[in-house]
Image (cartoon, rainbow, N blue to C red; front, side, top):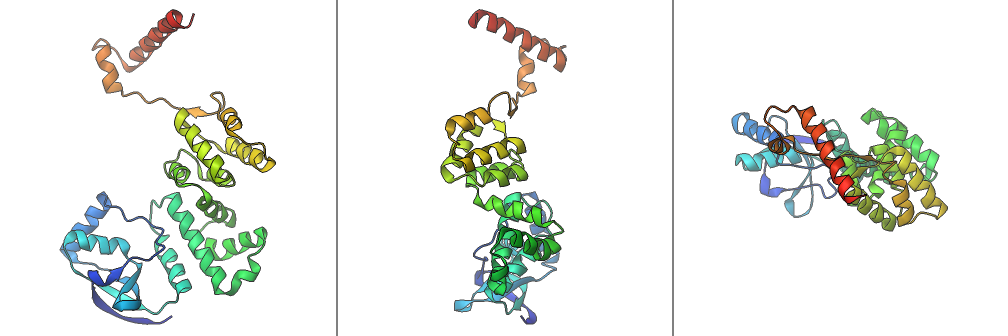
Length: 276
């Protein structure tokens, strides 16, 4: 792996890393970055490697490249490095894991990408057993990420989730620990679980996730069992009501608590009329 001097490259000659696990979103932070690029330019060169057809693959700097596009800048400073596939994967992960507010899905696929690269670098023979995967994860991946091997393994397990469930982990409907347990379910049971979560509008806790995993490994998990585990008595359910819309049905001087109490009285009357 050799460093080369910093050069200016045309944006049209840059291509994203093929297995890029980190999201590039046009959010408020991107707008601010683009404004900065307009004023002072790109202060930190991106890192690339040359590939076929005189193109350059971005290893670090996908967000800076996007900011240049928004700002109308056509060239960007870049450091061209000679990297093989494994070196490129490891550098990509290490350069981006320092970013704040990474989603669990981004961390999951990043750790998986780095672990696969480590295997390809000649360490595959010591990664065959589960305990040894944990050891290597802790010593190599966790060292730079400041996480334990157990945490690394949990994140990597998330890559086994269907996208709908992984999205719920990102949205904190399912905690990372629970998501790792659920990842042992096959696709059919994951789809059934996702449908149930959306139907009931519930969250899933670690205790429920462990029950789901145990029944699946025992061969007794089906849609009825999922419903039982995610029963109303066990799940954490939430009902969101827009208070600004609710106010118009009550006197102007009512407090939020008075509106809530009146609503419960109305529901009790409805129950007596319709559920007797």
